[in-house]
Image 1: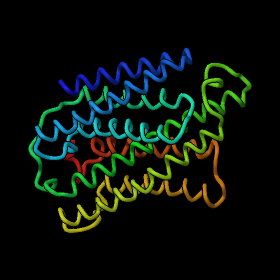
Image 2: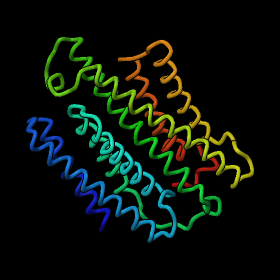
Image 3: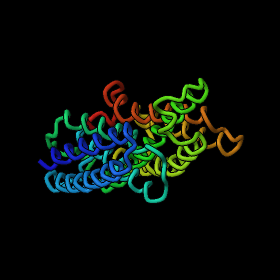
Image 4: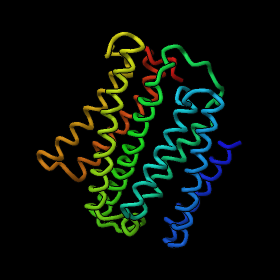
Length: 269
């Protein structure tokens, strides 16, 4: 019931954000933010109740992982909002959050017995850090999409729906860099904690398991983006595209590897 209430609250927030995007009524934006905050609080309570019900950190099933992913994006965005103002950013972020909530709602919420390898203090440490990293990288993805939409309208000189509603290209590029500057260190820490967990569970820090391999590929993509930004000033459209590609790698690591490339992590579903 808590998850259903949370889901419905996100639905209301989504409606407010989309209506605001169309009308640009500032009162609606205020309501949207308030409802999203309420959804984030409800979602926190839902995760805590899930923890009580399962007896362990609820990050081992597809339902719980996707739910926590949407929760991490919600609070990443709300924390971002305390310091920065990016025009209509919330509309794009809530779209990703709502998509994840729909996936979580369609996934089985059955409580499974925790496998021995997952019975470790590293479970909450590694999994929560890794998914929080994905939350900030998801915001970078949203910023990248917004950049390409705005750049396309400016390039073609067709000042339509998006031009007046999106921030400047410079603001969107700065947004991309901000999300990357938080998400990448968290991603790095997630991989490091995962290697310590692997050592404890399987006796070695690294096994070249498909999920480990794709986590490393994802890390290299974002490391390349950071390197190119700070060494040769690689910004703008190319940085936005790489942020989108990087997030595609994040999603493949989260879902594609689990179902298409069986390995030592295949039981985490």
